[in-house]
Image 1 (cartoon, rainbow, N blue to C red):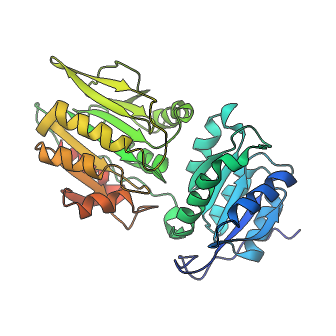
Image 2 (cartoon, one colour):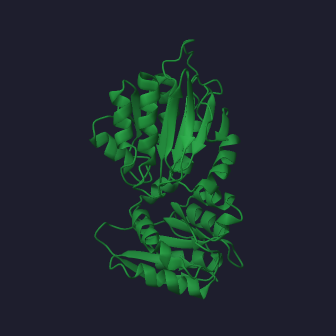
Length: 359
Protein backbone atom coordinates (compact mmCIF):
# COMPACT_ATOMS: atom_id res chain seq x y z
CA UNK A 1 0.00 0.00 0.00
CA UNK A 2 1.08 3.56 -0.70
CA UNK A 3 1.90 5.36 2.55
CA UNK A 4 2.94 8.69 1.07
CA UNK A 5 2.05 11.73 3.19
CA UNK A 6 -1.64 12.52 3.39
CA UNK A 7 -2.45 15.83 1.66
CA UNK A 8 -3.79 18.58 3.89
CA UNK A 9 -7.50 19.41 3.56
CA UNK A 10 -8.38 22.65 1.83
CA UNK A 11 -10.73 23.71 4.60
CA UNK A 12 -10.18 23.34 8.37
CA UNK A 13 -13.91 22.75 8.85
CA UNK A 14 -14.35 19.20 7.57
CA UNK A 15 -18.10 18.90 8.00
CA UNK A 16 -20.68 21.70 7.76
CA UNK A 17 -23.44 21.32 10.32
CA UNK A 18 -26.04 20.48 7.62
CA UNK A 19 -23.95 17.77 5.90
CA UNK A 20 -24.01 14.03 6.46
CA UNK A 21 -21.17 13.01 8.80
CA UNK A 22 -18.79 10.63 7.02
CA UNK A 23 -17.14 8.10 9.36
CA UNK A 24 -14.23 5.72 8.85
CA UNK A 25 -14.11 2.73 11.21
CA UNK A 26 -10.70 1.17 11.92
CA UNK A 27 -10.80 -2.04 13.97
CA UNK A 28 -9.26 -5.45 13.36
CA UNK A 29 -12.45 -7.20 14.51
CA UNK A 30 -15.04 -7.78 11.79
CA UNK A 31 -17.72 -8.02 14.47
CA UNK A 32 -16.77 -4.64 15.95
CA UNK A 33 -16.66 -2.97 12.53
CA UNK A 34 -20.12 -4.27 11.61
CA UNK A 35 -21.57 -3.44 15.04
CA UNK A 36 -20.23 0.11 14.97
CA UNK A 37 -21.56 0.63 11.44
CA UNK A 38 -25.00 -0.61 12.50
CA UNK A 39 -25.04 1.72 15.52
CA UNK A 40 -23.81 4.76 13.60
CA UNK A 41 -26.11 4.36 10.61
CA UNK A 42 -29.12 4.05 12.89
CA UNK A 43 -28.77 7.85 12.97
CA UNK A 44 -29.78 9.48 9.67
CA UNK A 45 -27.09 12.15 10.05
CA UNK A 46 -24.21 9.62 9.92
CA UNK A 47 -22.85 7.51 7.07
CA UNK A 48 -20.02 4.96 7.36
CA UNK A 49 -17.86 5.49 4.26
CA UNK A 50 -15.19 2.90 4.90
CA UNK A 51 -13.52 0.30 7.09
CA UNK A 52 -9.89 -0.46 7.96
CA UNK A 53 -8.45 -3.58 9.58
CA UNK A 54 -5.21 -2.04 10.86
CA UNK A 55 -3.37 1.25 11.31
CA UNK A 56 -1.69 1.16 7.89
CA UNK A 57 -4.99 0.71 6.10
CA UNK A 58 -6.52 3.46 8.27
CA UNK A 59 -3.90 5.97 7.10
CA UNK A 60 -4.53 5.05 3.45
CA UNK A 61 -8.31 5.27 3.86
CA UNK A 62 -8.07 8.69 5.51
CA UNK A 63 -6.26 9.92 2.40
CA UNK A 64 -8.66 8.26 -0.03
CA UNK A 65 -12.00 8.81 1.68
CA UNK A 66 -11.41 12.07 3.57
CA UNK A 67 -13.81 11.15 6.43
CA UNK A 68 -15.18 13.73 8.85
CA UNK A 69 -14.48 11.44 11.82
CA UNK A 70 -12.33 8.35 12.36
CA UNK A 71 -13.14 5.75 15.01
CA UNK A 72 -9.72 4.23 15.63
CA UNK A 73 -9.10 1.03 17.57
CA UNK A 74 -5.84 1.13 19.55
CA UNK A 75 -4.79 -2.53 19.48
CA UNK A 76 -4.43 -3.63 15.83
CA UNK A 77 -1.94 -5.72 13.80
CA UNK A 78 0.81 -4.31 11.52
CA UNK A 79 0.42 -0.78 12.90
CA UNK A 80 -1.28 0.00 16.21
CA UNK A 81 -3.80 2.79 16.63
CA UNK A 82 -1.53 5.18 18.54
CA UNK A 83 1.08 5.10 15.76
CA UNK A 84 -1.63 5.61 13.13
CA UNK A 85 -3.08 8.46 15.20
CA UNK A 86 0.25 10.28 15.26
CA UNK A 87 0.60 9.88 11.48
CA UNK A 88 -2.90 11.18 10.84
CA UNK A 89 -2.47 14.17 13.18
CA UNK A 90 0.91 15.02 11.66
CA UNK A 91 -0.03 14.69 8.01
CA UNK A 92 -3.73 15.51 7.85
CA UNK A 93 -5.39 16.49 11.14
CA UNK A 94 -8.75 14.71 11.27
CA UNK A 95 -11.10 14.32 14.23
CA UNK A 96 -10.31 10.92 15.74
CA UNK A 97 -12.16 9.03 18.47
CA UNK A 98 -9.84 6.49 20.09
CA UNK A 99 -11.63 3.20 20.66
CA UNK A 100 -10.17 0.53 22.92
CA UNK A 101 -10.78 -2.34 25.28
CA UNK A 102 -7.30 -1.94 26.74
CA UNK A 103 -8.36 0.78 29.14
CA UNK A 104 -8.94 -1.63 32.04
CA UNK A 105 -5.53 -3.28 31.60
CA UNK A 106 -3.59 -0.13 30.79
CA UNK A 107 -5.43 3.13 31.61
CA UNK A 108 -2.47 5.15 30.30
CA UNK A 109 -3.68 4.30 26.78
CA UNK A 110 -6.56 6.77 27.05
CA UNK A 111 -4.35 9.65 28.18
CA UNK A 112 -1.77 8.90 25.48
CA UNK A 113 -4.47 8.90 22.81
CA UNK A 114 -5.85 12.23 23.99
CA UNK A 115 -2.37 13.72 24.17
CA UNK A 116 -1.55 12.50 20.65
CA UNK A 117 -4.56 14.36 19.28
CA UNK A 118 -7.70 12.24 19.71
CA UNK A 119 -10.82 14.31 20.34
CA UNK A 120 -12.16 11.82 22.86
CA UNK A 121 -11.87 8.23 24.03
CA UNK A 122 -14.52 5.53 23.82
CA UNK A 123 -13.95 2.55 26.11
CA UNK A 124 -15.20 -0.79 24.81
CA UNK A 125 -17.52 -2.03 27.56
CA UNK A 126 -16.16 -5.58 27.84
CA UNK A 127 -12.80 -5.90 26.15
CA UNK A 128 -11.39 -5.82 22.64
CA UNK A 129 -14.40 -7.68 21.20
CA UNK A 130 -17.43 -6.35 23.07
CA UNK A 131 -20.61 -8.20 22.23
CA UNK A 132 -22.49 -5.71 24.38
CA UNK A 133 -21.33 -2.67 22.37
CA UNK A 134 -24.96 -1.61 21.86
CA UNK A 135 -25.11 -0.51 25.52
CA UNK A 136 -22.98 2.53 24.65
CA UNK A 137 -24.76 3.38 21.38
CA UNK A 138 -25.84 6.82 22.55
CA UNK A 139 -22.33 7.68 23.72
CA UNK A 140 -20.82 6.64 20.38
CA UNK A 141 -23.29 8.67 18.30
CA UNK A 142 -22.99 11.70 20.57
CA UNK A 143 -19.20 11.72 20.46
CA UNK A 144 -19.13 11.28 16.67
CA UNK A 145 -21.40 14.30 16.24
CA UNK A 146 -19.27 16.37 18.61
CA UNK A 147 -16.05 15.36 16.83
CA UNK A 148 -17.52 16.20 13.41
CA UNK A 149 -17.96 19.83 14.43
CA UNK A 150 -14.37 20.37 15.54
CA UNK A 151 -12.10 22.75 13.62
CA UNK A 152 -9.22 20.42 12.79
CA UNK A 153 -6.64 23.22 12.97
CA UNK A 154 -7.25 23.30 16.73
CA UNK A 155 -6.04 19.72 17.01
CA UNK A 156 -2.45 20.90 16.77
CA UNK A 157 -0.78 21.06 20.17
CA UNK A 158 -0.72 24.54 21.70
CA UNK A 159 2.47 25.67 23.37
CA UNK A 160 2.02 27.16 26.84
CA UNK A 161 3.04 30.74 27.38
CA UNK A 162 6.15 31.41 29.46
CA UNK A 163 5.50 31.12 33.19
CA UNK A 164 4.37 34.36 34.76
CA UNK A 165 7.25 35.74 36.82
CA UNK A 166 5.81 38.86 38.42
CA UNK A 167 6.45 39.16 42.17
CA UNK A 168 3.30 38.44 44.14
CA UNK A 169 2.34 39.79 47.54
CA UNK A 170 2.91 37.70 50.64
CA UNK A 171 -0.83 37.43 51.17
CA UNK A 172 -2.51 35.63 48.25
CA UNK A 173 -5.75 37.19 47.08
CA UNK A 174 -7.15 33.79 46.09
CA UNK A 175 -7.08 30.63 48.17
CA UNK A 176 -8.16 28.20 45.45
CA UNK A 177 -8.31 27.83 41.67
CA UNK A 178 -10.92 25.33 40.48
CA UNK A 179 -10.54 24.25 36.85
CA UNK A 180 -13.24 22.41 34.90
CA UNK A 181 -12.81 20.69 31.52
CA UNK A 182 -14.43 18.06 29.32
CA UNK A 183 -13.86 17.20 25.63
CA UNK A 184 -10.30 18.18 24.71
CA UNK A 185 -9.57 18.82 28.38
CA UNK A 186 -6.50 16.71 29.17
CA UNK A 187 -4.25 18.54 26.71
CA UNK A 188 -5.71 21.91 27.72
CA UNK A 189 -5.12 21.14 31.41
CA UNK A 190 -1.49 20.23 30.73
CA UNK A 191 -1.03 23.52 28.88
CA UNK A 192 -2.47 25.58 31.75
CA UNK A 193 -0.86 23.82 34.69
CA UNK A 194 2.59 23.61 33.12
CA UNK A 195 2.62 27.40 33.04
CA UNK A 196 2.10 27.84 36.79
CA UNK A 197 4.91 28.42 39.28
CA UNK A 198 6.00 25.84 41.86
CA UNK A 199 5.16 28.28 44.68
CA UNK A 200 1.74 29.26 43.34
CA UNK A 201 0.05 30.69 46.46
CA UNK A 202 -3.29 28.88 46.01
CA UNK A 203 -4.62 25.34 46.01
CA UNK A 204 -5.62 23.94 42.61
CA UNK A 205 -8.57 21.58 42.11
CA UNK A 206 -9.08 20.11 38.62
CA UNK A 207 -12.35 18.41 37.63
CA UNK A 208 -12.07 16.65 34.25
CA UNK A 209 -14.90 14.64 32.67
CA UNK A 210 -13.13 11.29 32.60
CA UNK A 211 -13.69 7.92 34.25
CA UNK A 212 -11.91 7.53 37.61
CA UNK A 213 -9.63 4.75 36.31
CA UNK A 214 -7.94 7.24 33.97
CA UNK A 215 -7.21 9.92 36.58
CA UNK A 216 -3.92 8.39 37.87
CA UNK A 217 -2.56 8.33 34.30
CA UNK A 218 -3.51 11.97 33.82
CA UNK A 219 -1.80 12.82 37.11
CA UNK A 220 1.36 10.98 36.00
CA UNK A 221 1.35 12.99 32.78
CA UNK A 222 0.98 16.25 34.73
CA UNK A 223 3.79 15.36 37.14
CA UNK A 224 6.45 15.47 34.47
CA UNK A 225 5.19 18.69 32.88
CA UNK A 226 4.23 20.74 35.96
CA UNK A 227 6.48 22.29 38.61
CA UNK A 228 3.78 21.97 41.29
CA UNK A 229 2.99 18.83 43.29
CA UNK A 230 0.17 16.86 41.64
CA UNK A 231 -1.99 14.13 43.18
CA UNK A 232 -5.25 12.26 42.67
CA UNK A 233 -8.03 13.80 44.78
CA UNK A 234 -8.86 11.48 47.68
CA UNK A 235 -11.78 11.51 50.07
CA UNK A 236 -11.15 13.82 53.02
CA UNK A 237 -7.91 15.23 51.59
CA UNK A 238 -6.98 18.75 52.67
CA UNK A 239 -6.34 21.46 50.08
CA UNK A 240 -2.98 23.24 50.38
CA UNK A 241 -1.40 26.15 48.45
CA UNK A 242 1.02 25.03 45.76
CA UNK A 243 -0.61 21.61 45.30
CA UNK A 244 -2.83 20.29 42.50
CA UNK A 245 -5.58 17.73 43.14
CA UNK A 246 -7.23 16.05 40.13
CA UNK A 247 -10.73 14.55 40.24
CA UNK A 248 -12.84 12.78 37.63
CA UNK A 249 -16.21 13.96 36.36
CA UNK A 250 -18.10 12.42 39.24
CA UNK A 251 -19.48 14.80 41.89
CA UNK A 252 -16.66 16.42 43.86
CA UNK A 253 -17.11 18.92 46.67
CA UNK A 254 -14.97 21.11 48.85
CA UNK A 255 -16.22 21.46 52.41
CA UNK A 256 -15.04 23.81 55.14
CA UNK A 257 -14.20 22.30 58.51
CA UNK A 258 -13.11 25.15 60.73
CA UNK A 259 -10.11 26.74 59.07
CA UNK A 260 -9.47 23.64 56.95
CA UNK A 261 -10.94 22.89 53.52
CA UNK A 262 -11.27 19.27 52.45
CA UNK A 263 -12.34 17.33 49.38
CA UNK A 264 -15.33 15.00 49.44
CA UNK A 265 -16.07 12.55 46.63
CA UNK A 266 -19.02 10.48 45.53
CA UNK A 267 -19.69 8.11 42.65
CA UNK A 268 -23.44 8.31 43.01
CA UNK A 269 -24.08 10.14 39.72
CA UNK A 270 -23.33 8.82 36.26
CA UNK A 271 -20.46 10.24 34.27
CA UNK A 272 -21.76 12.10 31.24
CA UNK A 273 -21.91 15.57 29.77
CA UNK A 274 -25.02 16.36 31.80
CA UNK A 275 -23.81 15.20 35.22
CA UNK A 276 -22.86 18.78 36.19
CA UNK A 277 -19.94 17.60 38.29
CA UNK A 278 -18.03 20.83 37.56
CA UNK A 279 -21.02 22.90 38.70
CA UNK A 280 -21.15 20.81 41.85
CA UNK A 281 -17.46 21.40 42.63
CA UNK A 282 -17.51 25.12 41.83
CA UNK A 283 -20.62 25.77 43.89
CA UNK A 284 -19.03 24.06 46.88
CA UNK A 285 -15.81 26.04 46.36
CA UNK A 286 -17.83 29.26 46.29
CA UNK A 287 -19.41 28.31 49.60
CA UNK A 288 -16.11 27.34 51.24
CA UNK A 289 -13.89 30.15 49.93
CA UNK A 290 -16.23 32.99 48.98
CA UNK A 291 -14.26 35.81 47.35
CA UNK A 292 -11.09 33.76 47.66
CA UNK A 293 -12.10 31.47 44.77
CA UNK A 294 -11.06 31.63 41.12
CA UNK A 295 -13.01 29.53 38.60
CA UNK A 296 -11.53 28.50 35.24
CA UNK A 297 -13.61 26.80 32.55
CA UNK A 298 -11.87 25.11 29.62
CA UNK A 299 -12.95 23.32 26.44
CA UNK A 300 -15.90 20.96 26.68
CA UNK A 301 -19.26 19.88 25.36
CA UNK A 302 -22.46 20.98 27.08
CA UNK A 303 -22.94 23.56 29.80
CA UNK A 304 -21.44 22.00 32.93
CA UNK A 305 -19.58 24.67 34.91
CA UNK A 306 -21.62 27.69 33.86
CA UNK A 307 -23.79 27.69 36.99
CA UNK A 308 -20.72 26.96 39.10
CA UNK A 309 -18.86 29.93 37.59
CA UNK A 310 -21.85 32.14 38.41
CA UNK A 311 -21.84 30.88 41.99
CA UNK A 312 -18.15 31.84 42.31
CA UNK A 313 -18.82 35.25 40.77
CA UNK A 314 -21.83 35.85 43.04
CA UNK A 315 -19.68 34.94 46.07
CA UNK A 316 -17.18 37.67 45.18
CA UNK A 317 -14.66 35.48 43.38
CA UNK A 318 -13.29 35.75 39.85
CA UNK A 319 -13.72 33.70 36.69
CA UNK A 320 -11.83 32.87 33.48
CA UNK A 321 -13.17 31.10 30.37
CA UNK A 322 -11.15 29.72 27.48
CA UNK A 323 -11.54 31.69 24.27
CA UNK A 324 -13.35 30.10 21.33
CA UNK A 325 -10.23 30.46 19.17
CA UNK A 326 -8.46 27.66 21.08
CA UNK A 327 -11.34 25.48 22.32
CA UNK A 328 -11.68 22.02 20.81
CA UNK A 329 -15.38 22.31 21.75
CA UNK A 330 -16.71 25.74 22.74
CA UNK A 331 -19.72 24.43 24.68
CA UNK A 332 -18.99 24.95 28.38
CA UNK A 333 -17.10 28.26 28.06
CA UNK A 334 -19.82 29.62 25.77
CA UNK A 335 -22.53 28.73 28.31
CA UNK A 336 -20.68 30.59 31.08
CA UNK A 337 -20.04 33.63 28.88
CA UNK A 338 -23.69 33.77 27.87
CA UNK A 339 -24.64 33.62 31.54
CA UNK A 340 -22.70 36.87 32.04
CA UNK A 341 -20.48 35.56 34.83
CA UNK A 342 -17.03 35.54 33.15
CA UNK A 343 -14.41 38.17 34.04
CA UNK A 344 -11.84 37.26 31.40
CA UNK A 345 -12.06 35.31 28.12
CA UNK A 346 -8.53 34.12 27.36
CA UNK A 347 -6.84 31.95 24.68
CA UNK A 348 -5.48 28.71 26.13
CA UNK A 349 -1.73 29.52 25.98
CA UNK A 350 -2.29 32.69 28.07
CA UNK A 351 -4.55 31.31 30.80
CA UNK A 352 -1.70 30.39 33.20
CA UNK A 353 -0.42 33.95 33.15
CA UNK A 354 -3.89 35.39 33.81
CA UNK A 355 -4.36 32.94 36.71
CA UNK A 356 -1.12 34.16 38.27
CA UNK A 357 -2.22 37.78 37.82
CA UNK A 358 -5.56 37.13 39.52
CA UNK A 359 -4.24 35.21 42.52
